Length: 182
Image (cartoon, rainbow, N blue to C red; front, top):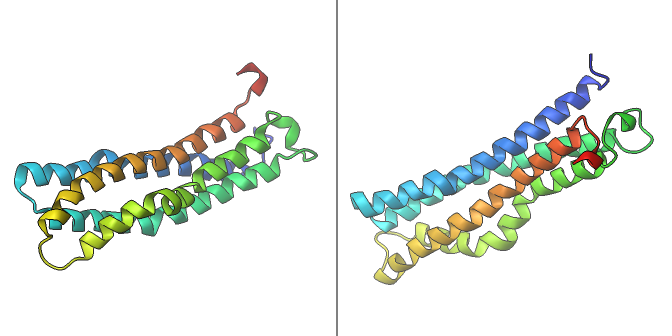
């Protein structure tokens, strides 16, 4: 039987599974969704004006769900950090650096928000402006869409790595062995 209260185990489960799922969800946009859109442009003749609108629709779906999932996941990791801090009954049951590692997991997971706002928004805004244009894009705008989407793919992969690293930090914090052995 576990010495950890059920609330702690639930928070661990939400933190670990939430950050891993979030990473996979985000990276899927870069590994499958946008490449499929570009494939359809090159092989099936999808106009770039429709391709960028399709990207916008996928972007809006991710924008609506991922920050909320990141917040809940980070809150779960922060609860874990608080529960195992020095002086608590759970502190002796976890590796010495667990509070720090859970805190790092929280910061990395919710880090998708500042990464998006601080690094990705110029690219996002340029793509959104093209998606919001009426009718066909000009030849110059069309020439800019694919390089912007390729740049977005790379930036989004980095964004997806943040919760992945958060999951790794959370796993190390939850590990039943002392960190000195790693």
